[in-house]
Amino acid sequence: MSANVKSNGAVAHVSQKTDRYQYHDYYNIDELLEEDHILAREAVREWVKKEVSPIIEDYSERATCPHHLFKGLAEIGAFGPSLPAEYGCGGMDEIAYGIIMQELERGDSGIRSMASVQGSLVMYPIYRFGSEAQKRHYLPKLASGEMIGCFGLTEPDHGSNPSGMVTNIRKDGNDYILNGAKMWITNSPVADMAVVWAKDEEGRIRGMIVERGMEGFTTPEIKGKWSLRASITGELVFEDVRIPAENLLPDVMGLKGPLSCLSKARYGIAWGAIGAALDCYDSALRYSLEREQFGKPLAGFQLTQKKLAEMITEITKAQLLAWRLGTLANKGKATPAQISMAKRNNVHMALEIAREARQIHGGMGITNEYPCMRHMMNLETVLTYEGTHDIHLLITGMDVTGINAFK
Image (tube, rainbow, N blue to C red; front, side, top):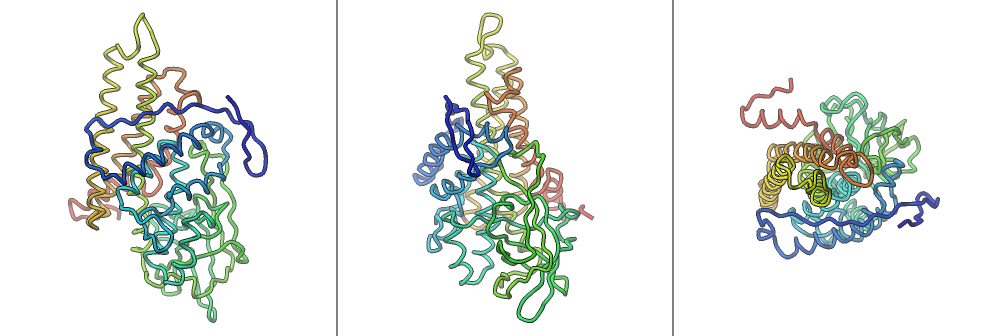
């Protein structure tokens, strides 16, 4: 089938695909979940099957962001699901948040990025560090999708070392003047506002809200990506941008502010990557049962069964890791190092499964008839952002030895 959908005001021809995905729970982990978790998962899965799966290959191939999905993400409660309902958010627990991210990334890592940036990197710091006036003004609009946000920490010359940032603010009367640039910012070209981190005149890291329309604030798009092609990415450029004092986040100072936001986002990624792995496994299992060679299904060969058995084993281990992390997060006991371990393990697991699943599909695995190659390309980015694979290894190393190997 095919359909016409509108994107950026233009009509695009999109190939429609039937989503045959079935969930896989080898260790009956559903028995550990609450009814609200299952209901949230089913609602998001239904939305992904209806709104994302039929169009995502086309948008990814054209490297175009499906902007219309922002509103749908808001309607299913994907923006700040674990933040308080009094601010228009979901009021759910951290396991529900993780499950929602898992279902979104099963559809596409870029779609999950759209949601996790909005909820974990924009709404969360406003809730955690913002004034009551900031919370009341911004959170309901962000939760409803009326406003889209982005998060400015990474700079052209400072990625894994955010403390080296050069973006800065200086006091000017009752305002502040912001100068600098941020790089690799999800949602930035379409964002209405940004939570930005900069150094003040004393060298202290401060958070602030920068709104589109402020003079000197631009958000050029980054082109030419081979990964996260359905997610829009750009820069944040500040040239003498005047920031009212009331736009600064009053309850945070120092690197702990942005790092706590990253922990929230990394937690969601640890769950989300499982969704990508499940989609690849599900496709490979079905393909191996339907595709025949040498007179029998591919699934009947020992090497194929080895691949499938190892894939579901690694997925199951990741599911248990994420569930336990979620129970700790619900109690406020999940440490940044524990989150780093889960993010690193689960993303690497998903990338390896995407590669194995692509092999099971043979030559068809490199086409957009199947999701494996798209997931594989996306996961190459997920392996790097919110802390690289190696940085998370060193975080665990520092945690178990007490020795900082970063310097």
